[in-house]
Length: 121
Image (cartoon, rainbow, N blue to C red; front, side, top):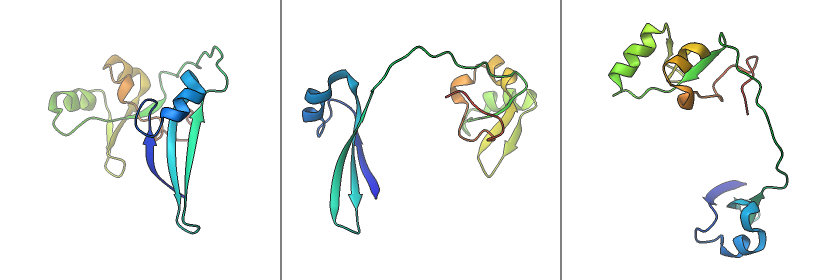
């Protein structure tokens, strides 16, 4: 099954679900089943909200950050922080404390971080 469309609350195709689920609605997805020639409309809902405190990230943890090609000065700063370029991933790898010092926390790609080095969710 393939997802062809994801809609946020309020966009066309979500009005009925928004009325039914209100603030609990996260998104509406349209999934297409090629084998059975069916379209499925699914919803993602908030079913529970609790207080959560993320585990602190160890300063020495290696993380991957995104820096665009045209951000030359930022790229130079990352290089000075002893980052290593990974061409296959198109990301820079450096220590978390260095990324934080450069203000790059919002550019960290947690998906690319090694599985052995767990990331906050």
